[in-house]
Length: 312
Image (cartoon, rainbow, N blue to C red; front, side, top):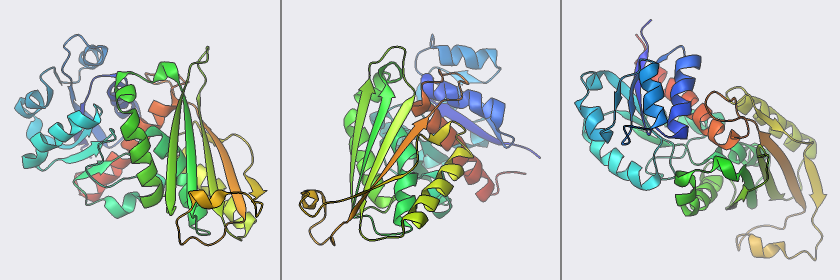
């Protein structure tokens, strides 16, 4: 059975880790091109050593490569601004795009939640690392009971946040909050990112808090635990840090300031603490924030390729 050819745009940390995951883990995808703009980047150097075709001329160089016509899926691991230009340049060629930036041109996709609904999309957005870690939990709660408000805090090692992540901080919070609502099912979403300067660096930690009304707590807990198992199937380092917590909301607590105007009264705060340890394929194990993005993107591309019958 032949493999579906893919290209990765972006020879930085995320793109390089994604390339190595494809080479090591995928039985259905073939690395056909690693694309960068810095000829001296470590990502391009590693790709050449691994006998992956490379270009340092960006998307123009990718289009000019002799096997470009055979490439079915293109990952973009650059930045939100760069992806807009890259998507426009690739639009005439009918490639499937998997966007690892917060550009959000296409629909938000979190594999464990809504991948099947977007297999026909030409450009899918992987939200953010915080979104990939926390939105499944919000969705797990909302499939049991309405969630008027959900808030997530993603804490990542400062050392794992490169220039691209730092440049996209505003897009991170906006994109994640929007996806908490559109994918997670919360009526109102809030996202916060913390760059933790601790040394030695700590692995990614995420906190999810959902405000809900009367509900079956056992059903909510079971739904969350099943979702964590589903995500861990493609992100092995993803796990609950401690049991799900249910805290009564006192009548005098001013939570109404967080809720939509027409929301019904909430009675309980659901708190979920997660951690994500990276697989250390290219990035350090503490960089779970980057690992969850590349792992999720790999899962999406494999399903997109299979759905369009690209595997022969």
